[in-house]
Each structure stands twice: as C-alpha cells, then as structure tokens.
Image 1 (tube, rainbow, N blue to C red):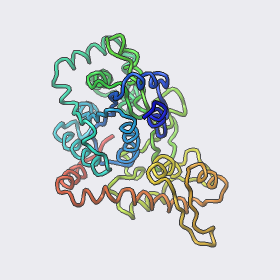
Image 2: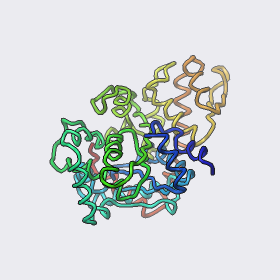
Image 3: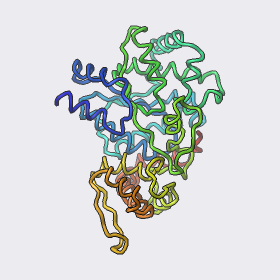
Image 4: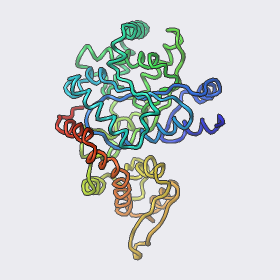
Length: 363
C-alpha cells in the first residue's frame, strides 16, 4: 500500500487533528508497521463512541499497516475512582470491554491487549513516571487533568497527580509511535511530544479523533480547553454517567427509539446537532448509504450516499427532524443488534455484562 493511501486512512474522519501531518508522513516512510495505541479506563457499560466510533478508527489504523495496542488502563481507572477505585471490579469491567470489542467485529488476534497493571509491575515503569514528573511542573500537571474528565479545581486526591505522568510513560513503555486517542486526551499527548526527545525517546505523532456528542446537544464550555470550540466539543461528549444522554450497546430497539426521539435536533441546523453527527461519524462510515423511509405524501423514500447531501437537505428543510430521528434510530438499532446478540448468546460475556450492569456508575 502506498504512503498516500496509508495517510488517507489514518487522517480521515473521525480523525480531527494530527500533530503533525508532516511527522506522520515521515514515520510511515521510515516504518512499515509503527506501533499505535489507544487507552481506556474500564468504567461502566459501553456506549456507541466506544463500541462503534473507536472501532471505525481502529480498522483504519490496522488497514494502514499499524501494529495496534489497546491499553486497559486499570490503574488509571482506580486513581480516577472509577468503580469506587476497586481494582478487582475494574478488572472485570476490562474483561467486559474485551467482549465488547469482539462483539463489535474487532479481530482481537490482530491487536495486542495490554493491562496497565502489567506495565506497573515493572519497576522501570515507575522510574519513567518519576522522570516525566521531574521534567514538568505542578502547574502543567494540573492543566493535564482534563484527560481524566476533570477540571483543575476538581482535584480531590494527591494520587491524581500521578495520572498525567503515567499516561505519558505508557506511550513510551508501549513503544507507541502514534497516539490514537480522543481530542480530550491531547494535553497528555502534547506533553509526551515535548518530553520524549528530552528523556531519550521519540516525539510520538498524535492522532486525535472527534468526540461524539451526547443526545442533549452542546452543553457549553466548561474550562477543559482554552479554545472555545474544542472546549465545547469535549464538554458535550457522550457520557456514560448520564444514561439518558447516551446510546449504550445494550439498549433495545424501543429504548434507542425513545432516546433518539428525545434528542436535541433543531430543524434546519447542522451545527451542534447530535443526530446528524451520528449519521456523519457512525452510520455513513459503516453503512455507506442511508435510506430515509417516509410516506409518499411527505416526499417518499430517499437514498443518500454521502453525508453532505443529507446535511444539505436537512438544513434546507427538505428533511424533517422526525424523519431523520426515525432513520437514525433504525440504523443504530441495526448496528447494535450483533453486539446485543453476542451478549445474549455468549455465557462468559453475559456474566460480565450482568456484573457491570449491577454496579453504580460514577463520573
């Protein structure tokens, strides 16, 4: 595969930012199979950003020839007080995550699944964490707290100060040349890019993907980033801790319909419209076409083969919000059916799901 095609795969949506495209090109010219990684705190039930959006980008990275590592950040989740900070519970949620990946169609034989607790068992890992923290400032560490989904003023425990140092250390211990994470993780990746050469490592390429919006729409800036549009995107992301704003992979047909019907979807408006976002970032990449089913008196059935055409009709008032909502609910239900079936028919997966469902989900 030529360099241009590999670049296209890595940089196409939902990728939103690459630091930097020139460095990515150089990396692909010098390495046929660079290591890329994405990391996840095991916490709560899986929603569509985790199971569908991230899987789309993972497939792109694999097709582009990357060796991909999926980090189950169990120690990070404990520091962030997910699942009450109980590492045994967090471990079970991590095992559940693996089943979600399998159910989503990810070939787990083509990726390396790494547990943060295994990295943490190596004394050299903690040496590197300390070196990272020695080479930055307290102020900089505090500014990195949005990677935990928290603002600077929300620091509750001294252990949370370790989190940015651990996330930077992860990159180099995993030998990751590409950090393929959400935009909400950019501060840790930028810190890694600055410190890598200073610590005798490399400057990793950061590939940041779009944060899928919650059903309630834009929530306004919360001080997670200086740039307002970026802050709004991160602040408005779909959150598992707000169930009615999220579509979970286990939601049944009627629940999906209800949630989508209640979603923020202003007529003729594309910006800040979560229902249109799901078309753009999930349905079109996975289905290639969208068929809107409606009675002849309301325009009849119409097929869209690209997102711009659908958005144009919507903003011009040719596509009613209710028709859009019914269509999106139908396609999301179709995409989630194989995942639900996996957890209904696989005994181990079902047990893990029942465990996670029984736990209280905290932010």
